[in-house]
Amino acid sequence: MRIETHDLDGTGSRRVHVYDMPMVDPASYWGNVTDVQCPICGGTIRWAEAGYVPGYRICDTCGRHFIAGGDDDKPTLIRVFNRRGGPAWREQIKPLGGR
Image (tube, rainbow, N blue to C red; front, side):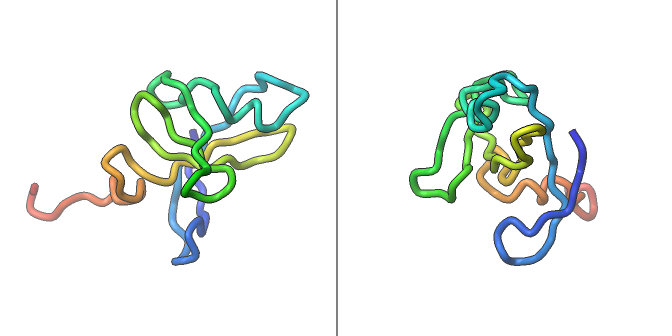
């Protein structure tokens, strides 16, 4: 996992977690980012473009949201939402006063 800066929703660049995915199916980019092991919990990353944008994926175990990224040689999953449904970048903000 590494942190990169991306503007995923058109509202400005934010730091996001990027996961390099193992090459499971050399003949198919989409086979490397769909129905594969979640890089966070070990669940299964499922196709979830209905109602979302092309390339959208959701883990069927932890519920985390990702966008497929990278290319044929180096597929990645970019984390876009946390499991509570808000943007993942909010998890990086520390509350003031210990709240």
